Amino acid sequence: MSDSAKLTSVDAVLAFAAALREFREAAGLILIAHDQNVRRLEQTFAHELPRYWAQRVKHGYDQVDRARSALDACKMRRTHGQPPSCFEEQKAYQTARRRLSRLEQMDEVVRHWNIKLSGEIEECRGRLGKFRGVLDIDLEKTIALVDRILTSLEGYLGRSVQDPEQDAAADSKTEKPPPPKPPDPA
Image (cartoon, rainbow, N blue to C red; front, side, top):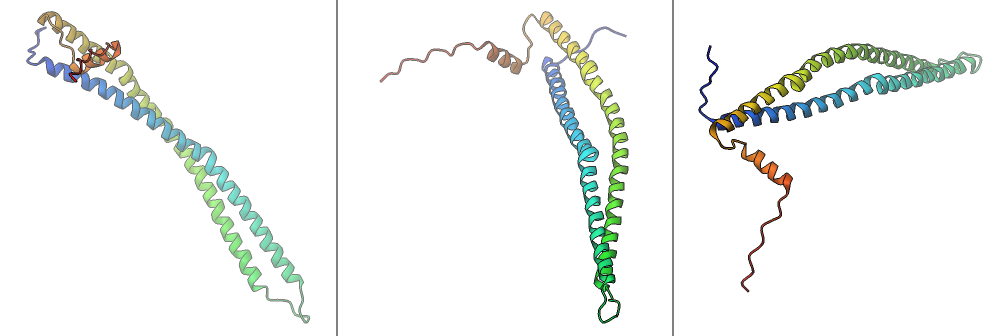
């Protein structure tokens, strides 16, 4: 195996280095956005939804209690010595119990998915941790290697091979004063 390479374009190496840096930046931003979204999702499932459904279940119990009290009060009344039908009160009581049952089911569903979501998030974090390692270690090593190659090329060619965009960025950091304006021939 030979230690030499056939390099036909310095511009290709410069473009590759720029693409690596751009990828590193974009991937980092995507990981930050992903972390924020996951934290919001965790907050919703771990705190907001359980609190919401617990309040709804409590309200459901209150409705059942009120409907039961109204039914009991109706059954105690006598009109002309006959027990009342209490049809409306019975129906309201059954409706309140059905609503409470659905609310309790939703509360249980949220608890179930909170547990499942926690496991999935931990698995995702593990996999993304490996990707972060690739970005932070492997990609940095690759960028450093490409930079060393560019430095070697500069020595071989005897001239600067820096990317014009990097030259412009470096020039803007040094902030040279603007050139003087020519006199106005008025």
